[in-house]
Length: 326
Length: 132
Image (cartoon, rainbow over all chains, first blue to last red; front, top):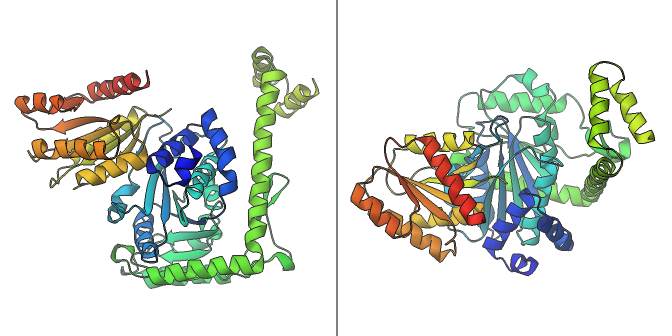
């Protein structure tokens, strides 16, 4: 399977992604064997509120990257319904220009209620595409919550897409997806109010210096960086009209600049280390819990404890300590 | 394991309400529906089916061109080595044509008045058959 994947067999790639999404034993084995062949693709995250034009921007950006004869893998994540478990994945609608190009592979992904977290599954799907040899991998998610923020941090360069008329400058300084941007894009910049949005975002950027995520022994903590750690990258605010492919040259140049910045400042290595460390610890946590639950605790014991917690006989934290102690 | 379905409008036909109703119904039945939008060529559909690794392709055709377009989609799927992907068709298809479509490999044809439950059950059976 690995050979077919690395030789560019698209059917194998598609099937491998399905296996990874379904967390089959075969997938876990494949991920282990392909891991040495990953780390070559450049990962770009695209996120932002619904309707800002993310998919259209990915379409235009991909067309631009293709003019340079680089290949692009796209992972477009849309939400799974919490009620039915189903999903409508519609990002391809905006990417029809990309059909028929064998240098592009688009995969729509439902967020599902992933065991081990959506971010982990996405990271694994990225690795499959990476091993398949794509030069760039673009991960598109709706910037709506914690999950999406976590996914975006898989990427080396995160583009946050905004559009005119979505909110004022106070929205812009609220915490959230804007904070994770390496590049801010005001799409639909031909619409009225685009200048106001650009101004609000630029003002937001001047109100404070950048903080960064630091994974510390498995916990992701946001800390105000020490002088030597401060990322000196200045987040650019770019205007695009993705529907007309306007501003793509500037956007791609900014991505390239950010890539060089990460490499020349050692940030790339540092971020990669942090991310992989926290992945290792997450996986360890998972395995330990699984093993603990299968080997040390019977379902009846667990059930009994839950009942005691429900009737306020014992606090949840105490119950957990007692289980570990037992 | 989720069932993945590609819902596509093939050819020059702008009437997509039916396709959207089906997409929504399949979503509510717990399936992952990749909706490709209007005016897809047979090759675009086959290419999307390949990349998305779907088990089912649902074609919506209201233009009357089904006898031209459906065989081409089947052919393109075959060229992409996707013989195992099952094709169903929805739209206004005369009874004579229903038999012809089935004869060339279409698994199910659903005309006006079809119940979404019926389609959901059909898809589940088809996928279960394939996995058996």
